[in-house]
Amino acid sequence: MYKIREVSSRRDLRRFIGFPDRLYKNCPQYVPALHSNEVKNLTRLSTLSYCERKMWLLEDDGKVIGRICGMINPRYNERYSAKRARFGWFDVINDRKAAGMLLETAEAWARAQGMDEIHGPLFYNTLGKQGMLVEGFENIPPFNCLYNYPYYQELVESFGYSKECDWIQYELKTYQMLPPKTERIADMVTQRYGLQFGSIDKLKKDAAQVRNFFDVYNRSFAEAVLNFIPFTDEEIEEEAAATIPYLSDKTSTIVMDKDGKLAGFGIAFPSISKALQKARGHMFPFGWIHLLRALKNYDTMDLMINGATPEWQGKGVSAVYYRDIYRKLNEVKGRTVVTNPQIETNSAVNIWNCWETKPFMRRRCYIKHL
Image (cartoon, rainbow, N blue to C red):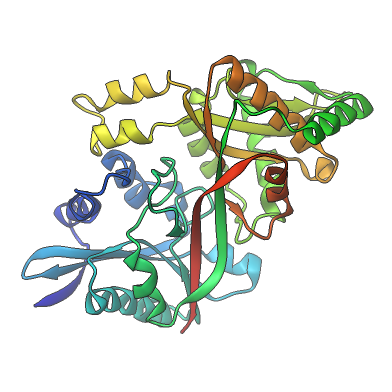
């Protein structure tokens, strides 16, 4: 007999976090999240100081067969003049009744909070995993992207959810020549504006520069990214602590204007997806070894974030940082690059028209009126 109940204890939380490991046990593409990170995301993240969230487990005679988290971000609703809830951490067996019980529970909670729409899968803000996979199930996703079985799409759509937006990713090989158009634009923009490259290694040691980097990140995506929510000071500190130590001049780049101010950036990491598969959700006893080895293997690279400051958008700066990353990846003998998820309506995706690419993944945000 199916039964829904709210997560209310540490044991419930462990079962909530651990359920996907059982659901995807025999799936070679699934990349487990580190359980310690999930505990932080669900209980200690600074975003929870202003967001509301509820978690539910679905059980069948005591065995977990599904999970879902409902969230409300008041800063999002204020920014977009909306009354929207969001759902995430949605995983379920291939059973319409089970999926319906989870979704309807989150919807009922949202209505009780005065919301008139719900969308997802999403994180509390733009920093976390988002988007239900609808194409590219044969591929292993980057560590910061969701993976789900193909049946999820049919289950969600059967309960009245429709497409809000899609994020798309491409795969390309670094052994192909840099597109002549990209080379020309990069040369022209660099010479015209006196652009130069900064040092990421120096930036990592300067707290003020790190803060400035994320301030620029905030401004760069405020208008260009759908559903973007500017980060609080606390969120910036958390994200900086989690990511900045792993940045390297070997694979990433920052572009400065002639006055030494940040104009654009491109961040790439070695893929750690297969290392996370070996770690099986845990850093210890041996998970950290797999991750350390992966960070020194540049064969497959994930483009994480890239952008230009608002005053430099539309001036071709993307060609400058993409060319620099291309050159660096060739130097470290990187062979395969997976692009970061980009909204399909964002003109920034047109940069990939200059390259020989193949579709890698498409993920979707669904929305439903309550």
